[in-house]
Image: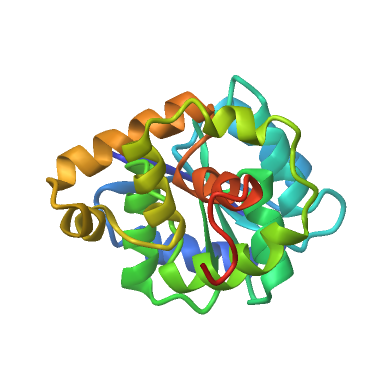
Length: 221
C-alpha cells in the first residue's frame, strides 16, 4: 500500500527537501503541501493523508493548533501527525503530544530514519523513543491537573492490562513487554489494543500520557 503524506512547513525549501527525501521510497507519495496550519487543516480534509509531517512554528495557525483541529475532526481523525521542528525542547514535544500528535522528529532527522518513521506511524505505531517518554512525559505530566475521570477510566482495565500499560509508559516495546511478562509479543499487543479501546485514547502516545496523568506511574517510577 502507498502511504499518503502531507507536508506542512512555512518554508518552501524545507518542504522541497522533505519531498525529495520521501520520493526515494516507492511506498510513499506526497499528496500535498501547506505553508501554514490553517491550510494544513483544509488539505487534510480534502487529501485525506495517512501521515502529516507538521512544523510547529508557523505564522498564523501554528502546528500544535492545527494538529489539535485535525485529530478532533471525525473526517480527519484517521490522519496521523508527526511534529517536525528545529527546536528539540521538552515543552514543544509535550504540547504536541497532548494535542494528539503520534510522534516527534527534529528537522535534522536522517533520510532513512524519516522514511522509517513515516511507515511506522502509518502502521499505527507511536513515534516516541523510550528516552523521550521518560524525560518529556515524566517531566510534564505530573504538573497537569488530573482530569476528574482518569481514575474511573483506569478502573475499567484488568490487572494484567494495568501491568502492561505501566510497562508501555516506561517506554518498553511490545517485545520487551512480552519478555518481561513471559507472554508472546502478539498477546502484549492485544493487551495494549484493548487498553486503548477501553480508555478511549487515540494511540500508544495518548495511553502513556493518561498513565502519568492518572497516577498509574510516576515520573522516575
